Length: 196
View 1 (cartoon, rainbow, N blue to C red):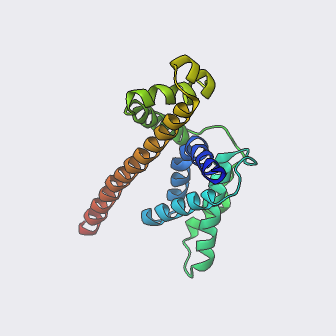
View 2: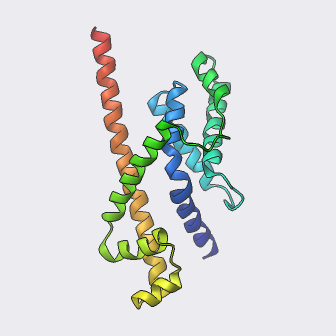
View 3: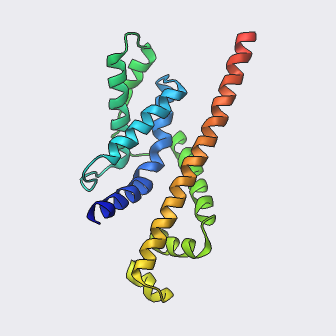
């Protein structure tokens, strides 16, 4: 049970503290001229590495931690590659994670992701949504929610976990659809440019 609980906590932490910065990492990889399919692989490998850590409690800046993992993965690929684009090297050198002030792109990405997250929360089953919002948005304890709604703490925990899983699964599906549209648009532009 301890492993499952730690895993659930890690999944919750990733969803709350890391997932919101995926767009930032992807934007940085695009600026580094990484191909779209390679971006997907790098981001997936980043999540895989985070999922394999024993504890996340020592991580004080999840954005910097995630982007540093993505950066290291790209460095590993560059080292293995025989041909490296000069703009990729320049972008690697320019990446600094110390400034916590949002730029326009990050602010726009964050707003879009908040709208997306709100929609996914709104799509949860009613009971699950109510409990999830009380716990994750309003910050109430499991005990407070259980007392308020006249249910057990175990039910609160189950519904919050269910809500998180539904949101993460829907987020992944949405991301796949968005990537598919973006890749299709990119292919159309490439074909048009080749014809011109």
